[in-house]
Picture 1: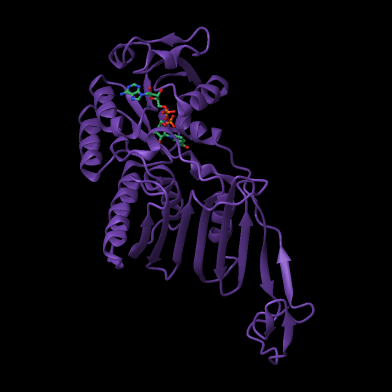
Picture 2: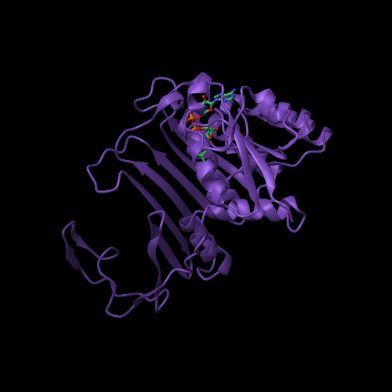
Length: 355
Ligand SMILES: NC(=O)c1ccc[n+]([C@@H]2O[C@H](COP(=O)([O-])OP(=O)(O)OC[C@H]3O[C@@H](n4cnc5c(N)ncnc54)[C@H](O)[C@@H]3O)[C@@H](O)[C@H]2O)c1
């Protein structure tokens, strides 16, 4: 197979990430960049094209695929423009700003017969994939609870992410990743209801905290919690945690490069006699130490996944060897769910979703 010729719109944070990745990923040839701000093109890698406009990039016959790494509010227009120019398109998350925009993008990309997918590379995060391995293996029995959390300790939010008319806010930034991970893990199951609390803790315009509860039709209750204003003077400026519990054990995981264990009791449902234990929190029975030898641990089925696997899948799917991992209806579903999340945040009530 020949290399896929790819050009990128937007040479900001993510444009630079893609530049580094695609220059070393087999099967791709990075052709060049366009950016609305010419200054952003000054440090484009020597030998790559610096287009004077998005239109010039889209008209370049050398380009097979346009990768859109511009701000969220331009995704709809740029995807449709690239499709009309006959280019296949990868767009950064979030796919768009609304369901209406997404439906229009689906219509236009289908009309022009171009390939279209979204860069949800966090499906290859090793912490997430390790937890997905745990879930898929069934080793925890009937899973009843999954918690996925991300806390920022430095109180940072940056650039256009703090402006609502620029598509800012943490729901659109990280929320789409965290929801996408849970929905993909629970593939085949409906979300019966959604409850959410969304807050602007210190930001005037945009959300910087949310907690989302999703009840699935297999009885799993999944919780996502994210906050950028969880201040702490810790060694790491963020914390990533997972906790999954079933009736045959629990799995916990900390960090993007996960550390954790599967934990089980050797004797399920044994009445331990209610002995009184004195702890730092005072006397307790249920929350004291387990009886000697009744708690056992196992290693997590660690997934060695990395983000370049997104482009490995893209290359194979491009040449028809497999399906694109990220399908547009899945991204649309994340957005439909985010509408329910926002409605719940507004009303303070649980919202019926896919009954
Ligand atoms: N998948 C991920 O993990 C991930 C991580 C970060 C950002 N992103 C996404 O990447 C996109 C860009 O985010 P960023 O953090 O790189 O922002 P950024 O502000 O650092 O970069 C955006 C760049 O796009 C340019 N630009 C804006 N509008 C344009 C237009 N209409 N035409 C051409 N160029 C335009 C800007 O001048 C800037 O150079 C966003 O959609 C964001 O959600 C994804």
